Length: 64
Image 1 (cartoon, rainbow, N blue to C red):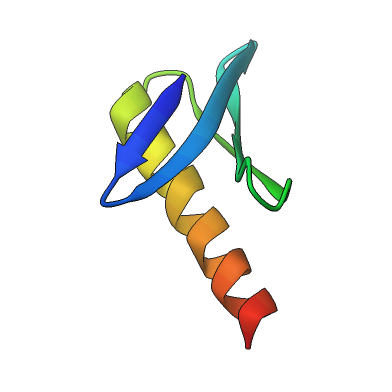
Image 2 (image 1 turned 120 degrees about the horizontal axis):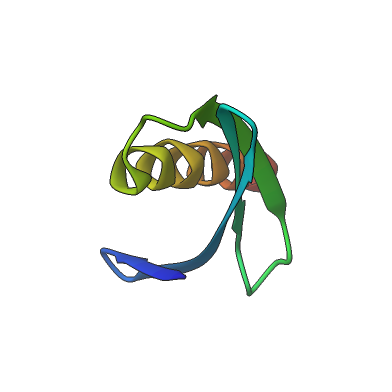
């Protein structure tokens, strides 16, 4: 699933493991990947937002 947020484009993947979901977000330009784990009852929109925010945070830390 590609997600457009402002001018950024990220790849987001969902893998359900029991009652949890592992969400990975990848920046296709740098290849940086981050993951989060959340409840399977959470919406995909919410989990995507959390994973993309974490990825943006990591990318900003790498630039500084």
